[in-house]
Amino acid sequence: MKRNIFAFCLSLILLCGCDLDYTNTGAISPDNVWSDKTMINAFLTDIYGRMMPGWSYPQNGTDEAMNGPGSLGSYERGQINIDNCGQNLSYANIDRINFFLDQLESVTVLTDEEKQQLRGQALFWRAWDYWGKVWTVGGVPLILHFQDVTNIESLFVTRAKTSECVAQIIADLDEAIASLPDSWSGSDYGRIDKGIAMAYKGRVLLQYASPLFNRNNDQSRWQAAYDANKKAIEFLSSHGKGLYQGDFADIWYKEQNCEAIMVNQYYYPDHNYGQNATRPEPLTKDAANNGQPIFPMIMAFPKADGTPLELDINKLSDEAYNDQFMTDFYTNRDPRFYATIFCPGTEYPSKDMLTDGKKYWNTWRKLVDSNGEEYIETMVKQELDRGVGAGYCGYFNLKGVDKDLTIASIYEADVDWIEIRYAEVLMNMAEAANEIGKTSEAIDVLKQIRQRAGINNTTGNYGITATTKEQVREAIFNERFIEFANEGKRWSDIRRLMKFDMLNKIKYRATLRPFLKDNDKVNGFDWTKDMYDPEVRKLFYFEYVECVDGDTQYSWNLDLNHWFYPLSKNMLDRNSKLEQNNEWDGTFDPLQ
Image 1 (cartoon, rainbow, N blue to C red):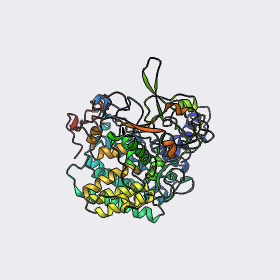
Image 2: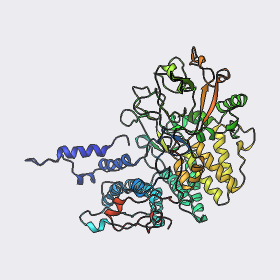
Image 3: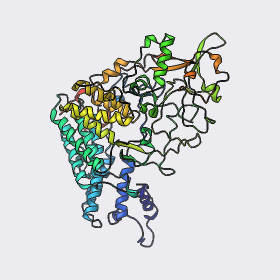
């Protein structure tokens, strides 16, 4: 897993494959791969390298975050057509997987158990790739064996029904579950094991049971999702997995902890990545300021007792109300808030720029230029003598931020990405449980999630007031927003539950900016102080900014008649057997 052996082998083929006057018995040929265990494993490792998901960032375009002014895409603004959102379905990975599976059948250098485990991993990745396609456009051509490129006509395949694709995906996952070991250890840690395949099956079935695919609310789909996730929970729990009980932030820093189910291991110098884009200026270089949490995200986290944080925007003009709300905002919040969201005037990990205990003061001042025009400027300019970019919300992601990075080492991050957490499997089960009438079981999961988060149970039920199926459904949706903030799940939740109208009602991307009450107070300001100090908070007030984009054309206006993406014109032109989705004036029904 820690080396792309196959890429190395391919380079040897290029070096040794020339035709000389003697027989090079040491040369590596494609045929030799299948007679060597190391090479066979290297081929599969190459598939991992191409397909393993990596670090996701706060999702621009949702109510989670924004990348700066003007970054709301045309799709989110309802400006959609086949040209700008048509999908090209790449089968490159499917092709490699099918070739591997076909070749594996005749391999003689592996034991039956070894062959079975390799096949199980490959089937998992085939299911992963196919579900990604079906999730996007509905049913797609099902190709289950390596294609003969010399038979041109056989390359053009019609779309299978969505239900047929799902049946094949689940069949692949079931065989993988039966074939894979309970776990891997040592250098094999991170490979697909039984628990990962079970957890992913639960995710797929939950998404397939959701309104996006299940307009008639077929209860059998919810039952299947519940059963799959419950089995995954039981298996994972019996093998030492569970909710991480330490500091919530440490889920990302304590490697191989009990909550990590499916993991992409990052390490320097061979498999590191850059965190420059999601860090604030001037604490980074090149791209910066992406993934800034916006108003719905920063308000979603409840108080420390689990009750909602509430704001009457119209009362912010009242100084006493503003002061009290600022205290409520910064103090005694859900512990996950402090592990996930950086707030202006608090600690940000940047040991080369924020030295001697300085906090990051990207709070604001209102100033007047020489022409008498008012403008705003962040206090960072005075603190660090360096300007910052425009379009600030003022808030940034903290989840998984590599605390050891400096500007010089910004591309050397090595925090592991956890694609599937135990908490997700638990909440997937809870959502399905609620839909089949096991509402009390769903509420119990919500309690477990909040208890682990560190919510004080002073109000009873950890602040959970939902009791009916409809209320619990909304409570789960909201809890996922908090628990999985900045983990790349928000858009899929909104889409699968067909909640585009929620974003449309929000309309603009807003924020709360803390402003200095008296501009002269910046002189001699103690940059080591923070907003948790009540005397410091008295120097500031909150101002609600309705449209951080600064241009009202950047507002959510998602089309409520288009839920699946179309196939691109290029795809349709290349294969006349393909049908376009019926939402896009075609004949293919992605709900069948």
